[in-house]
Image 1 (tube, rainbow, N blue to C red):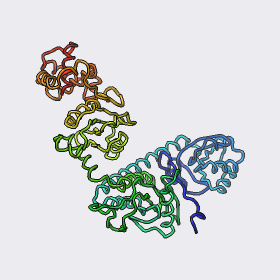
Image 2 (cartoon, rainbow, N blue to C red; image 1 turned 180 degrees about the vertical axis):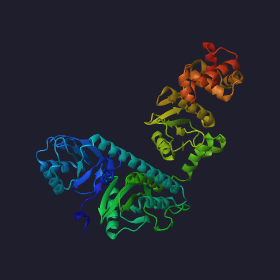
Image 3 (cartoon, rainbow, N blue to C red; image 1 turned 30 degrees about the vertical axis):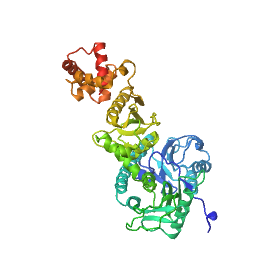
Image 4 (spheres, rainbow, N blue to C red; image 1 turned 135 degrees about the vertical axis):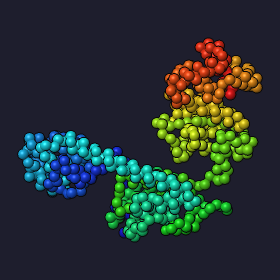
Length: 517
């Protein structure tokens, strides 16, 4: 049978917000007293809806357990046919006070149209059934999140191995209990892991790979199909196979179950194909994680120069001498240091940090692991930072290479200011006006002498407090401390400096000095 005569695979569509609840799980709740009296035993419940309309079709999304007492039930066969047409999963019929028992015509209609029919006893309110379904959904969601988390950790660990592509596929096949294959657009297997599918399923996987890797507008990013009871899916990868050059490690490893193939032509698109016996909640999420990792792992290598530049950023910001990293970073600048944190408070990982760097136009990214959780990005002119959705940014002014460590501190201060003022981007203000007239060396000497009594934490608190116009609350937010701690530190600063911090002249001089650090 040629491809044109076979039924087309379906393009993957977004699923419901929660995992489906098996009808059997709801019936197992003995306290509800539900009894299936017609229709098939298997059904997946996605929602609960109550309606006494004669035809609730326009208000159904599909997958509902529809609850009704049959107030306007006059034509059971048409009523059930319309529910099935709308995609309802099951019908729960409450007996009394409208009907003393479930109408026989409704039972026959549900058997005829294949819709599960549940008898709801008089002592069971519809709201109790709805709460039970939501509780089952919450439990299923919790199980799904735990499963996805375990899979994510296993896939990330596999991606860090010396043979990352085979390792990721092996973990993916194990967590999905199926077959994971890396395919070319022509259907050739580059890497495989897991149990072998039937010849029919293998051929269908190759067709799916060709569908998602077609180089034409409108080609789907993912698609699904079934073959012989096996669930199939394919996902287009962002990476491309490249021809290894002298000194490169061959991308095809020799892990168990793997095939070693010859180098592929430059730019050939790839697909991840999966064959599983069943589909479980969270499978699509786990596959999506693998797609991201495999897209990065199969992308053309950046080369030694790009890798060295990224490493140079980290070393420089951790205190290495500019002279040591200048040959790796290339041009002397000017450079802009950007600090960023997620606005939702979550810690950014390497992938999200890399995505931020790409949005800002730079591959020089430090994911911020260690004591600090800020992501740091180094931009080279003419790239200027712009607000990014989901992030709070602080940027230093463009600076030459030798001054990058100081710019790093200033970017951190700008980020703290942005968080305290709840602005998406705060940029350090360069010295202008009278401050720009003072020679930098004399200004720095004056600052050292004036601020000598202060410890670094006190100086940092004073700088933040002055930048926020003496606001105790905003300073506490920026420094992540209690407002009483801010008051104590500022009081200690006034004591050590022997001055009145309420005096505007004093504040102005201190602000000038603090900006020289």
